Image 1 (cartoon, rainbow, N blue to C red):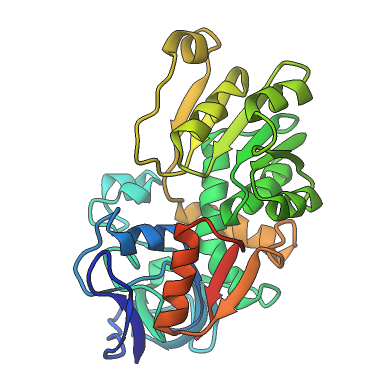
Image 2: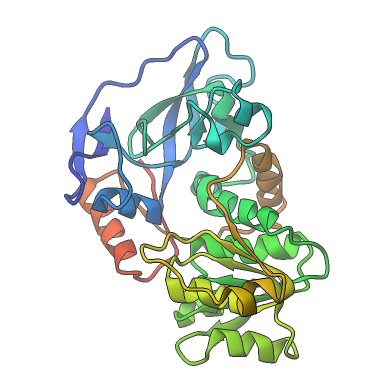
Length: 342
């Protein structure tokens, strides 16, 4: 089969012909119908986040059809439409049994530590396979599995509840999902902070109050729009020290700032004035949980979460097209989500 793979960090991905994966007794072979391109993939290609073993097929946002199943499989059958939870976990360790499988002692993230979805087929344990309803296109199903799932997990970490206000820093694929999911979970007002006018326009169409950070200081703007109080929860999805600081500083008393974006440089906090005195919380959020995905899929099925405008482009399974898409992400170029459709 064809697979686009990382051969060496810092170098373009390459197309290779490799064997179709074997299907173990507890595995499901999936023909990939859609694979999202995530900013994390750009980090992997650049070597900012180590990938091993190499060569590795990247891609962790995957939707497709079941092509074959192992003899012990009971929850799906050939032909079923499915999406894949990107963590392969043991199900038996302390973290798995307490519902925190992102820390599984034997966990492997597909497209990072085991082959992913920039390929025609992928084999994965049944535990990581979920049925994709007919109402959800494959392209949208793929982006559910990282961008939307990570946004939902961050909102749950921030303990957003009905009647609270929310600020979303960065309205790309994750941010557009965070806006809609925040509203679905009861946020009264959602503020969208970005410097891209097109993304801000789309965020506004999804019910957010846009703040153009190229024209206004986000902290001042949020405080002005909330009568000086600030927001109850902020979600930082960019990964810059400045925006992490802004996400903290725009909070009301007892507010919660959830950091998802990966910053390469340290942040500086006035611990008394910005954290202790107002009793704010600075929370890290990484990955998502299998148990969160059924609710997420149902939100998408009902169109409470509408991803039709989030998938901005589809490309073929081709190394040149994929590398160009990753280059675009590296430069924070236009578009929201690019999806490979083999």
